[in-house]
Length: 323
Ligand code: 2P0
Image (cartoon, rainbow, N blue to C red; front, top):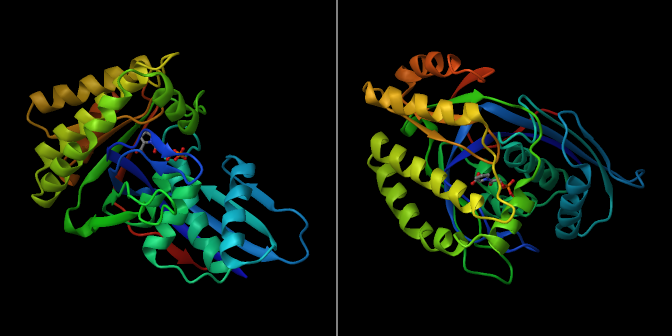
């Protein structure tokens, strides 16, 4: 009745921003991400017949109520009522646009389902993780990963991730410029709801997704970093434009965010291939070749307002660990 798992954060290259169903947490579009070796969550789950409520200890912060609701899904699947003791920690800041809900719910899905004795395929685990957080579905896999939008609105069973390339099949680096680690003022779920309800750009965002996904699949298959980078920056800027059009507008950027973005453009002008992306927070993540990661780090560290810079290689699948 006990298991522990580690899952790595992921950064979307083609972004997810919008749901078509909030009860099953079904995304309005697919998405494509890379999994990061350097950022992970470790989660231990123990179901205990003596507990009357879930005992949830999120050492790096987070929403215990949301974890308890996720455990309800696991209990329903397992046909049991037992409460659980959960302990989880991240090796990076939580709730700051560094994809902590992705690694957190992926690790929780794997550990809780194993502890509950559920036999689940990787696709079933990914679909389960999606119900905790949409981006978590992608963190079950390492390397390059595609989240499928799915067609089954009744069960959501086909809204799960699939691996595109393992990390070793195209080793790249992601350099993360940390600008502010404070928790964001509008969480992703609320931000998506507001954007879909009020942004006049939302429909265009959804309509363009399939073409962006197809182009990105091709660029990844061809190991074409320049094309992957162009598509990554396009999806990021288009997502933020969609958010800016919400009422009230959602601005996750800070001045240093734009300065870091410009620094990447300057590096490219000097012949170094580094491409940025920004999530629901001020941090800038740059995709580049491993051989260029130190130069990208040095350039980003010079940007006023950048507090820390971390290099990550692409990471592995989520896995069970010793508890
Ligand atoms: C992504 N983000 O594709 C996008 C880009 C942030 C910006 O997925 O409501 O925490 O839990 O399904 O997965 C963050 O949203 O949202 C996210 P929920 P989630 O990575």
